[in-house]
Image (tube, rainbow, N blue to C red):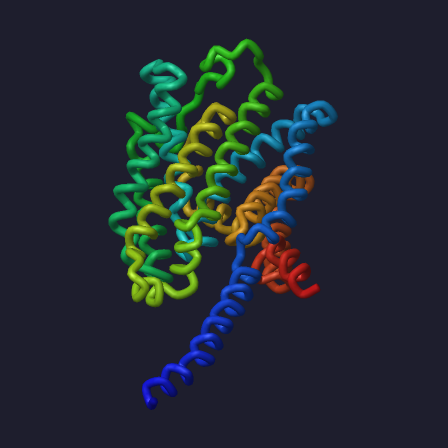
Length: 347
């Protein structure tokens, strides 16, 4: 009888627990970033931006076509850093190193060894990815300011190598004479518009791949590591391996941007690997909004415009850039794109 009463008493309790779990899961599903409802709000914005990019060359001058090309290249680079900074919570100050190494690889192979187009492209991406895989073994076990300082030191090592290895890198003079992508790849069309659409294709492909990564279970695990790594460890996740893979993937996408930049600029120098380049990249991500992909892409566009347009009117464009950054951090500490999302969530 007592046993019967015990089971009878357990029934409502178990039912209440199940109901509470169901309500908790429903609330969690509505509030976790990256759910379909939030993604659907972002899709129209992304589609509108892509439509404008496709139609851009038909209404813009060659100067603005070149500027948009730069924006897309640095948007790829900024989104690659966002995989580390925004989604994994790993602030890197040496990320420009992978960008520069890939660019140098294209420059050396295409000018000194007269390698083919696909050899240069594959070698640039492969070398940058392999370098990130090697350096990732050194940095993936540290966090916070230690990660920041080690990546800064490694980035300065790469910069010093590019500056001092004169027989290969040309030192401070850099490497010029990189062939145009259209001619090197044997495309039937040439000119800035042709290169623009090639860059747009690369930008879209990289953006889609990164969006798939961050919306996958792997991407949600990275978010969990960013928020509470010790809890993720207690749940059985190998947090070191996830951080390592995130670092390698970020380096791979940065290498893609470096390859495209080498063909766009036709010149590579150590300035693309120094601390200023990495800091500027860090600024692109934080200005646009880390943990969003769209935000860093817009941040990259804003920085490119500020650098190229404002610098044509004043030599103190860095002062203006710093002022914009300070005002943004005071008004939107999580970046401009996250401010937009926060207002929508509040309403």
